[in-house]
Length: 345
Image (tube, rainbow, N blue to C red; front, side, top):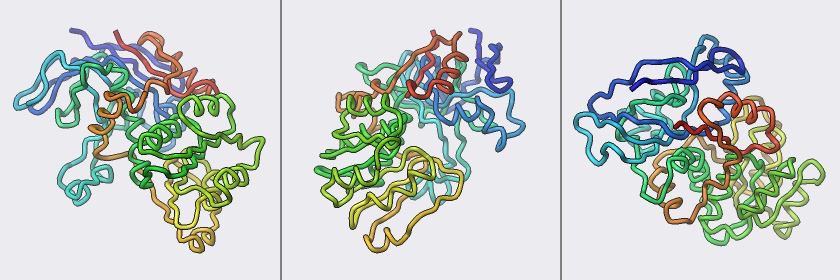
């Protein structure tokens, strides 16, 4: 068995290199990687933005949305065997700190997260991974769906943080991959009205296809006025900021209803001009989302049962040899690309 990796060696450049076969230690499984989703954080590396934070990271292996097949089981592992199709939860927390002990392990300061330096990612044929963060997939789920559980988990965690329940009205500001996963999660929770706002018509068309009841083009319409009109002047019960930009973050307080909840999902690096008056006069809540925790079993059940059709978010599948092209398309063709997946034979 020879291991081959798509190694990022420069901005917008991959080289295929032979890398050592992973050692499968006690408590770990060896996984033949089959599908890897391209995440926004991968794109930040690919276009050079992440090098401002990790200046010495290259050469580096990207990819943390992974599904594959177990080929070896380490000592002490139970519940997994060679041949099992699995999904990988890419963050491995310490298990000992206060956040881990209270169940919020996504906030562990010592978490080891795939494709975040110095930890290489899954764009390689074989990896080893802790068994307790490796989930066996039901027979009716593919390894591609296993890879897509990672972004879906963000949407599920966001919906849980927002307390979305049967009959709620929901506004999602941003129709990218995470916005769509939030849409799917909110729909599965029973939201009655789901409004998606974005500036790209193809994203809005996709949102309607995936279950949004209403869409708003923020480029041509007054998004705040339109969302408020669609909710009878009350605003939405739960508002999700998923675009990760200051403009949509500033809108959240104007479209949340009295007593409602704002959930900040997008990764906004700069400062945001925000009217807190809208928050206190409405007694609204603002909650943050950082990745997810305890979501994979729920995500697997939702996809396996047919309640969430996660493959709807996939807009392109690329062979391993064409991984660089898949990344280029994800970066340069954002209007048409929601989620590209690299398939490894």
